Amino acid sequence: MACLLAACGPGRAPSPPAASEELLGILEWPSPSADERYCAWYGSERDGVLYFGQAAFWSAMRDHDGDPRGDLQAPGPQHIGRVDLARQVVEAPLDVSEPGARSGVWDVLAHDAGVFYTTFYETAGRVNPATGEVIHFDGLGKGLNELAHGPDGAILVSRYGDADGGDGSVLLLEPDGRIRAEHRLDPTPGHVVAPKSVAFDPVRREIWVNADLLPQGDGQVRYDARILDLQGREQLRVETPEIQFVAFRPDGWGVTAEVDDRGLWLRILRPTDSDPMPERGQRLLLDPHFDRGHDFAQDVQFESGGERVIVMRWSGRYHLLDLARERGTSDVLPRADGEIFYTGAVHGDVLCATLCGDVKVVCARPPPL
Image 1 (cartoon, rainbow, N blue to C red):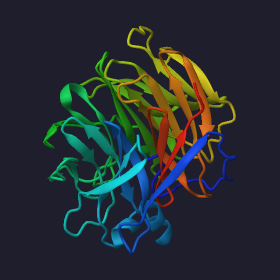
Image 2: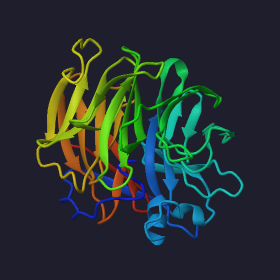
Image 3: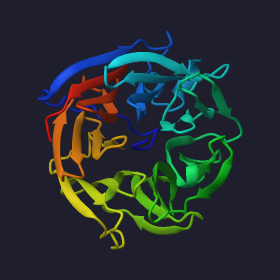
Image 4: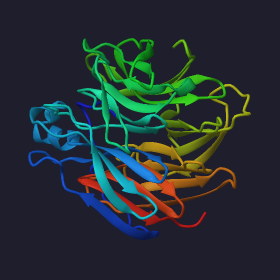
């Protein structure tokens, strides 16, 4: 999550200006529950299909006076949405529900072994998108949050916190759900460390994780990012700039979306870069007017098998870059007040992004690079 679950949510900033790209359409699904208002969450693209979680977390929290456990007050199915990106066609969702399920699907990861998912309050698992067969990963515990490809076929997943309110951790899972390793993050005095996004650098064989630092008592939420070795030992901690998201390709190219007093930046990390962090890589200023109070770089996704990378922001503004040609463009997708975008994916000349308001995916043709 972008911030403390109990303390903040999508900023209700004025809607962005009208989009200048060619809008292809807004795909919309009915809520899978008559009792709760689900919306579209994090997604993952594979073979031209965008998979994404569906959850009622935000609306349920508002309906229960800001209680982040509001989603657990009513039963509801656990669905993974699907969109054929080439045709912008809605496919039947994947139902991964367990009996009595209440927590929606948060993050998904399209992997060789299937589509992995988390539900935060309940069980994580894996589904075969061709057959619909579901394997629930019992025994992993609660608080599992965001997913990424890990080392040697493993799946990285963050645990936002433990059952006793202690610091969170990073897990490496085998494709069958067994825990290969779990690394608790080093403490920050006066705060609970709650990890969010995770990524794996396959060249340096390092694990990246960013975290919310939740105050124990009075104080404000802070943020940092850590780089770990495969034994979970912290190699580096970065507080400034704020690293909002990190992603790596299998060949070792990586990017970080970073924010400081001068705006939103993209740091390009090449496999051959030898400088230590935070000097490593090339920084590009994406937006000098970035509004930290109402916007967030929610997700970064590499094009499957391609050179492009997309940074998707709450506000609908996105940044699409072609790393090979060193060219990029920025534009904005339409949304209503209070809605936020999660994940953008590109396939050919089409860009589609998940929109959390209802269960929506917005598709457009971005401006040429």
